[in-house]
Length: 161
Image 1 (cartoon, rainbow, N blue to C red):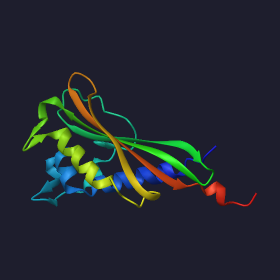
Image 2: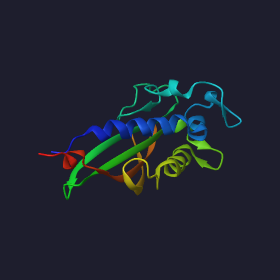
Image 3: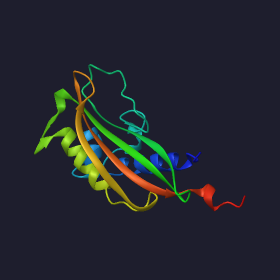
Image 4: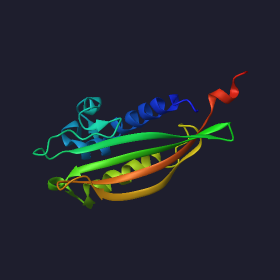
């Protein structure tokens, strides 16, 4: 069975990229950004509005946005490399969906696509966007789920037996 160690590495890179994107952070909580510059430590949003797993706090009365993610290892291909599936889900309360030029989840999805599609620092080759689907979480939250595929070397295949 393939080791899952790249999963933690991928999630750390995903979270770091998200908290370092002023455009995405502003859509999550505008108090962190002013005129495209950070005014507060955006890392404070981790485990509040940015989760490295699929989770939404039970704050049905608060109108907030979230970014959640999951990474699935899909096993070993030809015993040389692993394939992984990366899901990034952007979520918004229905009451704050409207933003300049579109909807909050569409804008957040566009930024996530720009941040990760074609990136070559997760495995080898480029991270590839394979789907971008709009959905709903419940009666008050809407979401956009972006699914990426990435390949990485299988460290076990390089070991002497």
